[in-house]
Image (cartoon, rainbow, N blue to C red):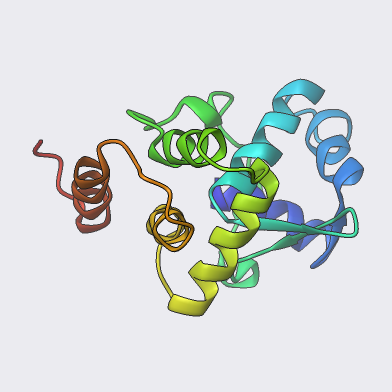
Length: 156
């Protein structure tokens, strides 16, 4: 995912309009359909890799430091790769159902917490839930899953 985003920002600059972000992937580079490109955008937002400000998409990582090969072409199944369980989405769903906050507000709060505490975005969601006094079902399991993922261990 980071390679795709780095390519787009290296090509388009440090800010890209949302429409250009999608158009570039679908029509310009012919990587994905427009719908799939929208899903790439949504997933990048969920992962905290990009943020939106005044309809401009901005990276939340150092895209210039990523070396992209000249013949770079992303995998067609980018969104399906390596996703066993979408902990981010599960946590986001729980928080949005148990609060008055919109999904975008929750993501924004998590991104701010991520920056403030220098933590991973899924951990930031847990912190946001705790600060808002939102009970997360299976909280300990999420902590374990996130911890194992960060450490790179697969055992359950």
